[in-house]
Amino acid sequence: MQNNTLKQIVIEHPQLSTIFEELQIDYCCGGDKTLAQTCEAKGLDVSKVIERLQQVLNSSSADKTQDL
Image 1 (cartoon, rainbow, N blue to C red):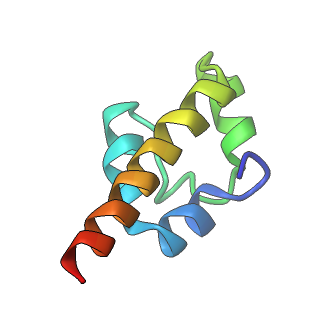
Image 2: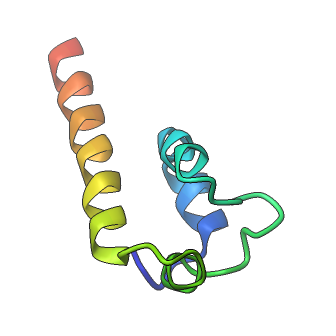
């Protein structure tokens, strides 16, 4: 995930946009940068950001399973 562009991540997983917004990461105009590049520029630990994104993805998957 760290080598994907922000734009790719949000297109594939729109629910992650809220995390980017909370972290003040521009995934629209700055969407051509990779997650790793962006985290480095903002002084964020990319592994912690990925962990947070995975938590959202995992909870989204659990919600979908419960709906069945």
